[in-house]
Length: 89
Image 1 (tube, rainbow, N blue to C red):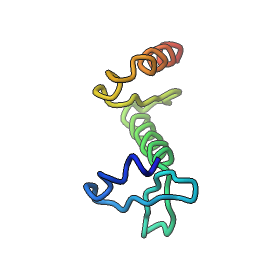
Image 2 (image 1 turned 120 degrees about the vertical axis):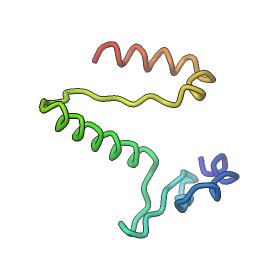
Image 3 (image 1 turned 90 degrees about the horizontal axis):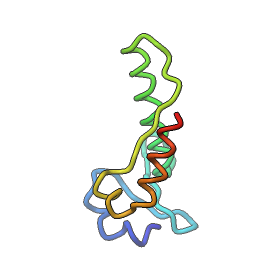
Image 4 (image 1 turned 60 degrees about the horizontal axis):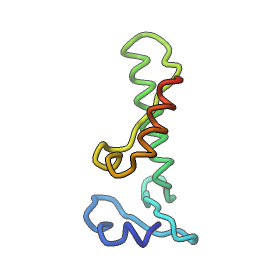
């Protein structure tokens, strides 16, 4: 929610805005639209997967990202879900 991000929104080099539902969006003047954090994460993961496939000269069938370790320490249930999910990949 934007209310949680508002106090630190001015500490990043990009413009953080609120959508009509109170969610955080990243404003892009180049793309002329706002992106959800999940969209940015998906684009980064897609690019990392493509680069890994080129480097390995092979197909990458699965990839995943995990939240920062400090955040995971505060969310032990999420840690167990992430570990279970990555073990089945």
